[in-house]
Image 1 (cartoon, rainbow, N blue to C red):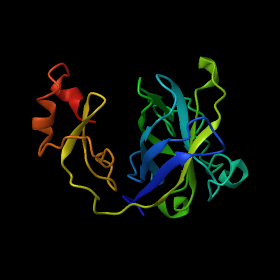
Image 2: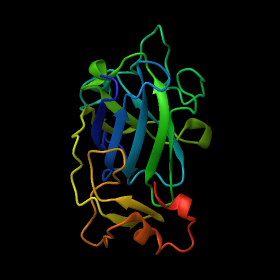
Image 3: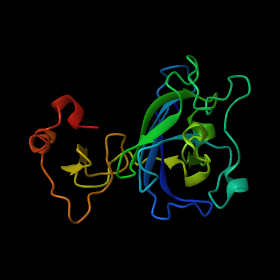
Length: 207
């Protein structure tokens, strides 16, 4: 299904150190690289701080344990995009994420695993901890199962401040930043929200 989107609610997995890990990963098959290619976007909180890791679709259909999660999901004819290395045809910017000082991990990249929307529904998507070149063990620390994304976002769709960004109060869409918490102040427009972040350039204010 070209243009279809999948979404996974992420949580801690495999007894990892980030028991409160929480967030969403969205995969939209937009055909920018090939008919099976897509864009993966991630926003997961409570991970390791100020680091880099990998985020990959796996062949398994459950997050119960490493065996159920399976290995990298890809068509051998196309090749494996999930090695975090840059490959112009299947992973133009790599397939990793970065976290900020609060431990919020973000990613936004194109990939081509050789399998499209229909064959990716129900697959596990896994967040790996800090890469080995930075001293990490690259363990599988968060997991979710990709389901059809609700075409209508859930939430107020107003804006709130999160770690020096203005994000939208909703889930179910690639533009959403997650549901606001009770302590978040909501603003009706991105412009009004960004107006409070006077130290942030306007073009950098909205994720």
